[in-house]
Amino acid sequence: MKNFERDNSLDLLKWIALITMIIDHSWYILPVELQETFRWMRTIGRLAFPLFCLAIAANVYRQPTGYSGGLKYLGGILLFALISQQPYSRFFESNYLNILFTLGLGLVITQAIHHRTPSLITAGVVALAVAAAYRPILSYGLAGVLLPAVLLAALQARVIETKIVTWSTAALIAVLANTGAGIMLLPDLPARALASISAAALAPLLGLALLQFRVRSIRPVSTWMYPLYPIHMLLFSSLSLTWI
Image 1 (cartoon, rainbow, N blue to C red):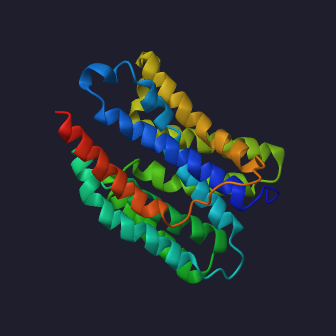
Image 2: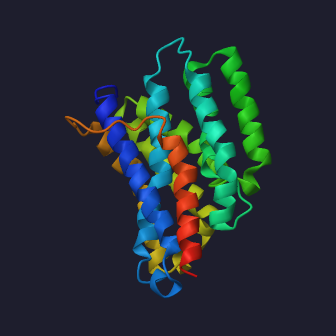
């Protein structure tokens, strides 16, 4: 599955993830009377988290044996996870940990599975234990932490039957990350909730299509993505306050 362009296709995936995330968060600053009309923004937002997880899986998948940049990659995520927590809590008025903590734990587990060195396996077990202990306050829960590893398995699949199983599993985990135990109420959910579930389930396949898409040129999504996360929440918080 290493036949897609490394830079441009992955940057396209990250751009779509960023755009869908911002569309999702923009819904929260709409006047209350408009939120129901623009509920479709929340549905589009269900694509963002699985696409970010796929970006992590694709990055790890491309790492050569003996890759030594994993600590720097993880450090950037965790640094901005800490920086972003106060803006995140302020914007969502939530006691949950922000998405970067979930992605950071998922990265450690995914690297452990891919490289299988003793130190990474130890780190992966610790990350899994931390995720299990803090799952009640992790954004997207334990399923969200495991999603990058499941997507890595899907990227690694060679046999068609294995591909079907792994990508189907990834779709299920993406839905569980977005809905949690709410999936048990599937027959009784309203149409807008079903639309969000469908978007989450289709996100891994959409991501796969984006990774296969050949792009001649696109602006790279690099480390500026990390500060964008807390900055856009601070901006949205300020806008929502001015409109009260």
